[in-house]
Image (cartoon, rainbow, N blue to C red; front, side, top):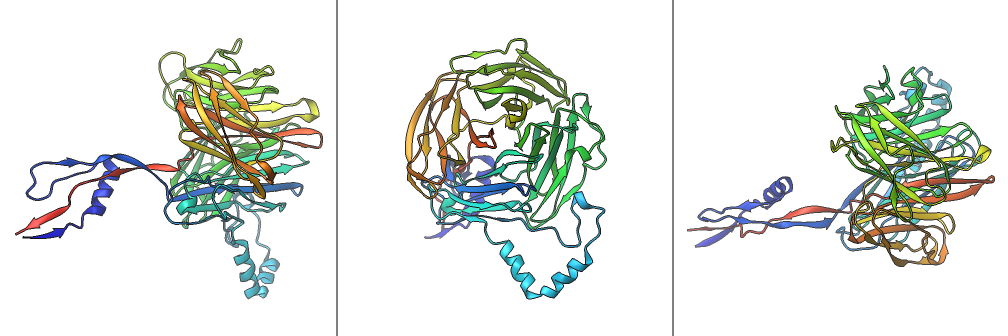
Length: 521
């Protein structure tokens, strides 16, 4: 007798990836051996997209890239953020559809010859590259035409890779501290909390990381339902390019509270909304967590002077939700706003004013009538008064899960909010090495059920530059987290809030174990 190995392993793995298990019967076998339970292994490739930061000549942007130290990821790999390619010279951006090409400028480019090619190559070199695990890398720009960035991490740099974009606009209509966690490309995004009102200038930024064009649709929903739009369908986002769309130009209807829904017909994009409000400030509005019957919005600052909840029910049924604030010591319902009725496919809002009353808090939305209708939600949060107001946005977010990271933290001004909507939980918080020096530290915190714990992170010893914060679940129920970064500029406490959902650093990989040897006569 002789033995011949079967060449079916790849097929088995593919089947296991789809079904969650694998079972084989070799010729002559009567029994079936089931695979072991799926194991969680580190991802070996991650993608992140950062929007074009600002068009202001008075803005300074810091990019921070970071991967937590840890096991896995396979080969050494790399993590780089590079500029998205500009649109072809003969293709107008949506904002400049009617503009003619500058023929003289085109002739100048032709005259440059090889020099022009060299400049283009230089423009696509990495803006920032990680040199090692557990230590952030940073880069800065003050260019008003700084491009969107497309990033990829491979090997050991992929699991938990995070990137942050932080812009300080000291003056002008878009003045403020604008923070955005660079996000993975996807095909479906919800943004409650946008506006087409006269006092707001909100843009949807669509970034395509791939080598083929993507086609996206943008739908807008106000308090009375869908806002009529003739230009929100079939938006082409060229390969490795970014397209900003001014939301107020997509409809003739002005609405203070709008839910923006971005989907793709083909391809995938990164999507985020930049919101600038006259005399209040500006910031990025990140996408809400996927529609769900319960949503958590963590990290409302203790000194918030105005908090507005904006929610949307995307299905066919209305939603009735309980509105609860998880404060420092207990959970309670805001006076006069214990519930919110959200009509199907209509945007609802509540002005919660200074709901935290000097204590940090987080909002929880949950079914009030047992219907479990899914919703999406976000908060518009204002600190300060009069000319010293500043605005930020907090979208509903998932729990930190196994691990979550926020990349850009400073020696002063970083605050971490942790909330446990269910059981009491314990988490481990790691402050990384500094980008230019300083040692990492670890501390464990217990978050009591139904409360919000505000933590000022331990500054890394000998800190130089910025550092990253990583939160890991250790025991108990789920924990939701957000980081508030505050920088004082022109006498204003400018701030931005980033949530910390699970970083997706591991994936389930089914393990198929069977002797795949066939015995032949």
